[in-house]
Image 1 (tube, rainbow, N blue to C red):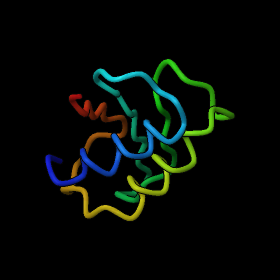
Image 2: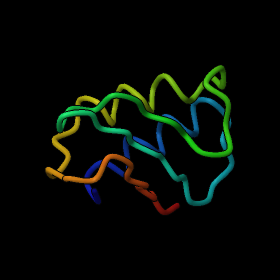
Image 3: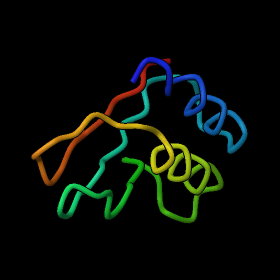
Amino acid sequence: MARLAPEIRACARKGGIPEGPITVQVRRQAGVIDSVKVLKFSKDHPSVPCIDKAIRKADLPPSNRVLEDLTFPK
């Protein structure tokens, strides 16, 4: 996750999200990412599509959890 943090922060800066931790909720179905939600921001926020794309293309560790919260520090 540490190597993904700079990309997430870059997306946040581009869209005007203030510095600070960003929590992303990943929902998986059959081990595949089904949805990505940036907590505290609507799906229409300018940073969200960039963050969604970064999460989906990242090589996330496998998980049996349906919902997983990932927090990226500032």
